[in-house]
Length: 150
Image 1: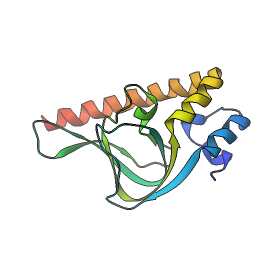
Image 2: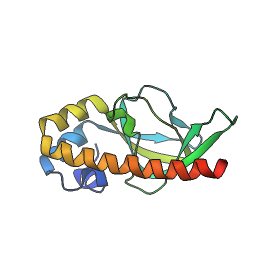
Image 3: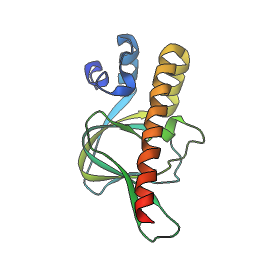
Image 4: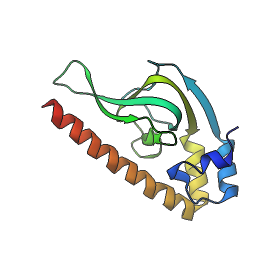
């Protein structure tokens, strides 16, 4: 099981109380994915939140005007989160995530995580505000990447 000290390194969980971090740790799983492995695909039902422990993950989208996917962002720094679609309606991944190298991930099922946040609204507010920051950052990255393809 992941240690609460490790969870506290993720910006999404900064400042959350230790008892809450323990509950999050209990619902977390560590997963290894080999280079080239697909973590999730664009359009699939999103039911998990993902965190990078080490490695590198490329986030890619398909364009109707091109046969290949376009990389819109890289998650390559430890303690970054991705797959936020698991906790944001309509709960479908907006990109595909593929490992550019062997990677270690932390995965949290969205449903119990959201129930926990609902039980702790102050912490839930902090987490969801941070999720909006991640979404805004990815939107900026996506826009820049897509403008380069035009």
